[in-house]
Image 1 (cartoon, one colour):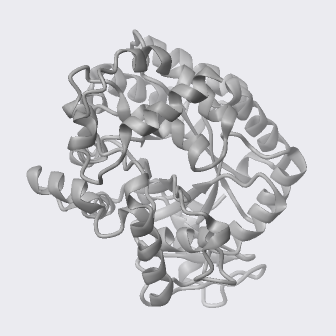
Image 2 (cartoon, rainbow, N blue to C red; image 1 turned 45 degrees about the vertical axis):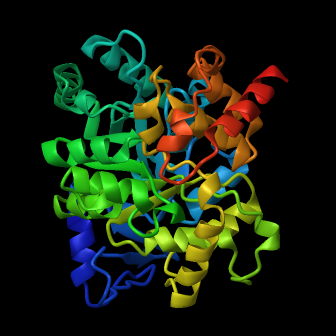
Length: 399
């Protein structure tokens, strides 16, 4: 397990590793190191050296492939009690017992749903520790924080302080699916969080587009990517997710062959020095080989321009979860949450996961309150056809 002291020692070692190669890029402030074919970066102030490609646990792959992914150098797993009704955590626990606790860093989460309290958070974490069969989780995160006020709530901070004092978590963090500027901005400003896991993909080209740039000016921030730079300046570790989100027909897009568009998307995010790791799901050997070929590959100018064209070609089809629609809705419906759940089906073809997420936010009941007034579409800076997507969701739920 690579910690900060080991990381710094390895950097200064003249001979590098006996078992691997030490790489130190002159123009790479992210402090990348290479061991046995995998590149690692420090996860901010945690001092953990995490693989540039990390593994998402929703779901984890089958056991033989999971072992192979770890053998290839992936050492960070992002899981949650809501993934597979706890089975993702159980599988991660089995994995730690098999390969050794010192070979893996585990991040898991807790929800702030329904009536919650400091005690309910603690109970959730203790349940996760039981399923993981471990005494301590490396990174404990709020799952899907959407309101900035929650980050400085005494109940949340009290639970984190208690878990750390009792040795049940080492570092604190949050994941964010919507309202990024406000939520991530509060996390950076309060400086109580060590890790932020956030959606980051090619649709953030040009500083997140019109919505983030506009809201950034209103809040005195420099848009989404500027916010990440502020986080990195405070040594907060950034883990990117939703990196492969796209509605482009990949089979018809040949501009980057033999590099796949998915690989180019991963390269684009990893080219950002603020990012420590990208969470992906590798469900078969082909996906594993594609994703794990990316670390260490530089992004070329031609690839960057091609990705900008790719993002532009589907810009009006993809929700950025900026929250402008929800703010304009007379019913204050969780529109970004519905569209995020629908993206599992629309962008990734994950029918069961989409249904699980839609049921989790009671999408049928939510959609029944929609007035079809069109305010959401008027407010969307990207011209997203929200009502047509709602129609598709209704049809999916009725099937």
